[in-house]
Image (cartoon, rainbow, N blue to C red; front, side, top):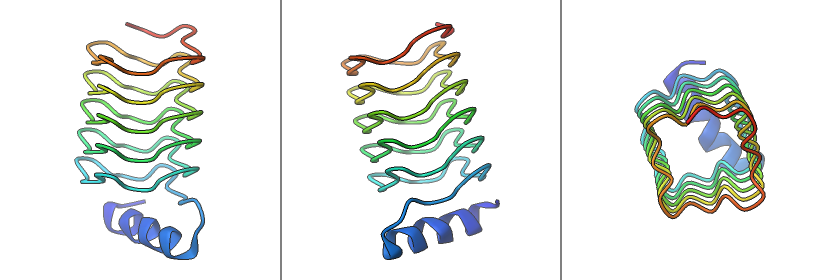
Length: 127
């Protein structure tokens, strides 16, 4: 899914009160500041360098998503599925990752200062 179609899907999902289907979407460097993506399907999406500051990604499926160098400061990732996600160099300062599944995620150079990791699954993460 290209960037234009992905942004249109986010707007439509918001209007219709449903989670967005952004599977495999290209959202490289997208400005999604404070976006409501709760429950969204972002599996395999490319969010490299995206600005997700303060975004609500609670219960979102981000399995195998590329979030390298993404800004997720203050984002809500409660119960998100980040299995195998690439979070290299991501800014997760103050993010809520409570009960998130980070199994196999790449966290090399990720900034987790002040992040809430209570109950998060960090099995086989690369740090």
